[in-house]
Image (cartoon, rainbow, N blue to C red):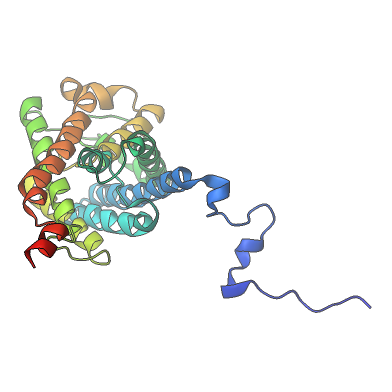
Length: 290
């Protein structure tokens, strides 16, 4: 007689592990470490941008005057994005952070290009989702017009533009400086030899750092801090009807702002390395002194 007893559930209740053609999605054999890390960076950056861009969209469409809605949205987006990705890839979710990590030997240079592409992809798809969710508001606000400048401009929901009276030179200094401060602060918060706060709390404080930078330096050119958060949405805009304007307005700001952020990430990493890490006592030195 056939055995009619139901099959036992997998250990831990992970029923999805036995789905046809979907077994062990996290297997190193199927994806490889680099693929898994890139997926984590893509998802983490998606979480960052979907909260941040969503906050800007709600701020504009609701007519809110308080910018703290935007600061908080981006800050918590960074926090949640890092929590999503940190266990697999380290939770860089930012090419400037990855560059700073590479420049200081905290991660391999081979990660820079694939991580960057994954981060750009996450930012692109986050832009798409926010556009779909707020589609009716886009239509109500500006109709079929997709503009980058003017009273009905909506491109600023997705990416950053300096105001007309701020020159690109000042805006580039701004972006490089605040990104350097941001990356250096990340190093400080995650440095176990310094007053590191631990992996559980670090993402929250990194998010609060973003909120603080927004509140302190958000006027000149937004507080992008992240080339993926800048370029991914700009790519989405170009493919969704805004054309080339997101790249060319304000003397081609869209083609240079992200570079200033990358420079800032490099400087921030080196700055922390030269001023803090090199002056820390090595474990070997401590043992010799004892």
